[in-house]
Length: 89
Image 1 (cartoon, rainbow, N blue to C red):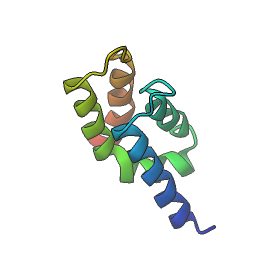
Image 2: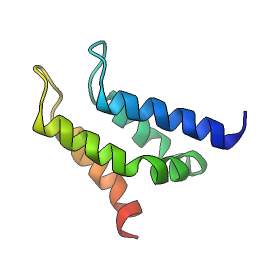
Image 3: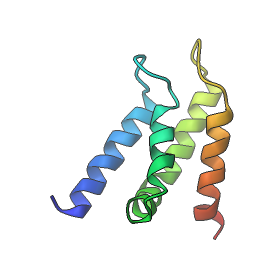
Image 4: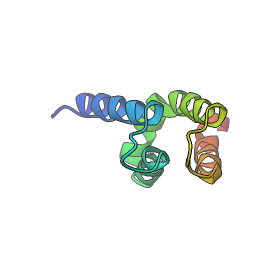
């Protein structure tokens, strides 16, 4: 598979999971997966470039419209910390 195709598929899946979390698992799951991929810079860097702004929008949407039994805001703070290098460097 071409790396660009793989990146677009991974980005699409991540965006869908961030904006419409499944009730089958915690709403923070896509963010935890994204943060874990940042350790693999060859994956994390291009994924961050394509996903960071959409991830921020999804976090803001979840914070403004929390779901019943939703996760703590800590995971979102972790995302902001992880993205800050990309945004402010």
